[in-house]
Image (cartoon, rainbow, N blue to C red; front, side, top):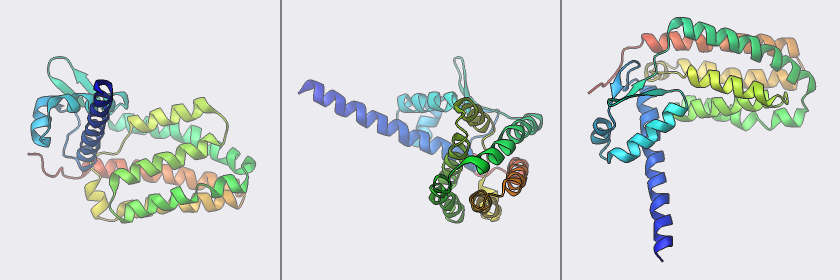
Length: 229
């Protein structure tokens, strides 16, 4: 009986850790947690009304994603990304993703591409429903699933890492202005071009989409940060 109770406690702790992680990601996206600032686990725990342990565990998860970095004896610093970093991330993604989309368009079966339509529609639904975390997660799944059709696992890992390092912060203002919906709808446009076998059109759409994403990064960084407590 003791072992069974222990397993139950572990599951409960994991759920709390996930809940805290979700809340911290939401705060990052909303701009509540500011890039470059250091936050202590006890301080965040007090704000969230939980103990410090699940906060530390959740922050370590975020550190593995490149969203924060540990600061010895102080807490965690929100990763700060410069304009130069963002330009370089965009350049690398363009060099990798645009030609890959062209190759996938020429080689992938229609059924493989159609299978991704629900994810593309989910991105649009999240943008329209103001679900920013859902938007980013669905966007990640869509892009990486498309690239996976190339058969190059290392390519997918590389783009996944670039995406983690260039996550959008402060999206609330952009969402309220309706600027995420048009970017979301580009996923359906891209998929339609690929299903039609239009490789040049798909490449052009991907290049344009990445340019729009870079613009969103810039606008998101310029948005005034909301409640900072």
